[in-house]
Length: 233
Image 1 (tube, rainbow, N blue to C red):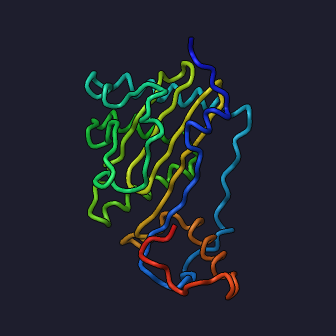
Image 2 (image 1 turned 120 degrees about the horizontal axis):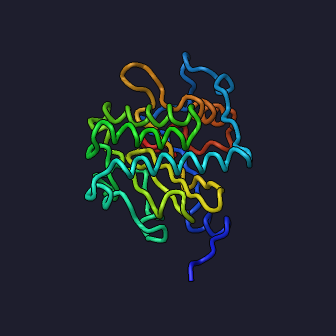
């Protein structure tokens, strides 16, 4: 008999967690002179109960379109059962250090990549999609492949409990749908370098908010003037 999943169960199975990382050389916590204040960037709009159902439907449609465009070999790599242990396996590091399962963009045709991006774009707000693209683009500055991101689907989109994942270096987005409700955890965004070669920042709102918090702290809260290493989490 199929197991009934509650929203609480889905949260547990999804290892509900939210992480943010910014990686940079060890420097004092000072705000860049040209950096815009965090308040200048519009905050995300919350999803209402009504739009959550529409979101679930849109995600299912986009996922179905992507699956229909894959050949049998690609589809086998991209799909898992909903209750497979792969669904709760994730990491923020590079695929070289933590091998991923799923179908990478590097193994997709131009049409398939467009459909994969359409799935990501419909699953998040426009600001979230733009941020994801910026994080992926930073891989070129590191000598990594900006298309080494994996798309993995769990269950059958639009039927019962299902979900999907977009993951690679410093970007891990998970989406689970049960009874029209959407859960978006685990959720990891990171940036290193924080500024690319063109002087653009992938995560200005988060970076500025973190710097504002750190620089507002008094001496009792600061145990070291510089970051411990290049990684700040």
